[in-house]
Structures are given as C-alpha cells and as structure tokens.
Amino acid sequence: MEELLLTWFKANGRDLPWRKTSDPYAILVSEVMLQQTQVERVVPRFLAWLERWPTVDALAAASPADVIREWQGLGYNRRGVSLHRAARAVAEHGWPDDLTTLPGVGPYTAAAVANFAFGRDVLPVDTNVRRVQERTGREFSPRAAQALMDLGATVCLARVPRCVSCPLAERCPSRGKRYEPLRRQPRFEGSFRQRRAATLRLVATAEQPLDQLDRDAVESLRADGLVAVAGGLVSLPA
Ligand code: SF4
Image 1 (cartoon, helix red, strand yellow):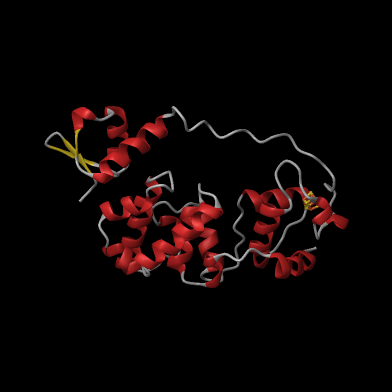
Image 2 (spheres, helix red, strand yellow; image 1 turned 135 degrees about the horizontal axis):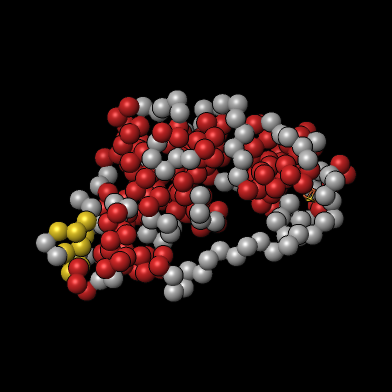
C-alpha cells in the first residue's frame, strides 16, 4: 500500500516551496505558519519571510516589533513571537536534540522538522495523516509522510473522500464511505480573537494611547508578549 501511495505521490504531489529545501530553519518557518493557516495563504508569506530573514541568525537579530508586523494577516500572532524566540534560542545554542524544547514547537511540529530537515525516522502525524491511517487501517513509514499529507489534503478528504481517484482504493476498507460534517471552527466575527487582532493591527501602525484601546485585548496581547504598555501608551515590544 505504501508503494502505491509513493508512486501516486511522485506524479501528484503538491509543489510546495518548503519541499525544495532541507534547511531546518525554513522548514520550521513553514510548519509554524501551517499550524493554523491554509497552505495557499502560507506560500507567498513563507517566500516573503525567507526573503526578509533567510537564516535563523537573521531572524534572531530582528526586533520583535518587525516580526509581529511581518506576521500580520497570518492570524494567531503568538506563533510569530514564539518563532522569533525559537530562532533566538537556536542562534545561541544550536538546534536541540529535543525540538519540543523550542518555544511554540509541539510534538507534531518537532516531528515534521525532525523528518523533513534532519531525516530522522519519525512520522509527523497531522490531521491528514491520521485520517488516511485510520481509514485504511494501515501504519505507514516516515518516508511516506508528505505523500500521506497530500493524499489527505487532496483525495482522502474529511467529509466526502474522492475514492475514485485514490491509489489505495482497491485495498481500503473505508472506500466509498461518507462522513459527518466536521465541527465548525468558532466564528471569528465578533470573537475575542477578532478584538485582539484589530487592537494589534492598530498598535502595529503606531503607538496608541491605552485609554483609547480595548483594555481586555491589550492585557491579553501583553501577556502573550505581543505588545508593551508603558506610560499610558501601547506599542509593539522593543
Ligand atoms: S479509498 Fe477513499 S477512504 Fe480510503 S484512503 Fe482512499 S480516499 Fe480515503
């Protein structure tokens, strides 16, 4: 089954810029961006990021304010701050054996960087990989990681899988099944996330008086290291 999958991947795999490198920094940037943002939106932002900060040392030397500004529009801004902190840790101490010790790097991201950058024998299991494994009832080896991701993202879809186009269909016990709609993401409109994003956008353009901002949003952004408050003014961290 894995051979069928890999053959399919050779002809159908997505052409993504982070697949053209084994630089752990570039792969970490892509994985952090992909944590909560769709692939199509990540591609141009990833390329722009790498152009601005091509190495881990370059990112480590950037100011938090510049990093937060560059992250604007990707959502879940705390990821940008964590990525910056991770770059500083790597610039100072090198890449740790246990990548989960880096800020913002959980088990999945650690496994992805370990596999794609360091060639370690570990399978990063994201929602796409998990879905294909569960439906086929098979375990796949780490070398099939990207193929599993692409099959899950383009063929073995969450609700209505495209089994007629699937290279694993003949041997898949779930062939032809339909699935319940996934739980919807909480609405962004009117949410506290939206208030935070709007407040940060404002502060990113220029320093703002605290009394003219959403206080709860400022406090939450401050706790995440996304803004600094001093003398009644709110700014990006120095
Ligand atoms: S046959 Fe259908 S359910 Fe099975 S892996 Fe392929 S797309 Fe998914």
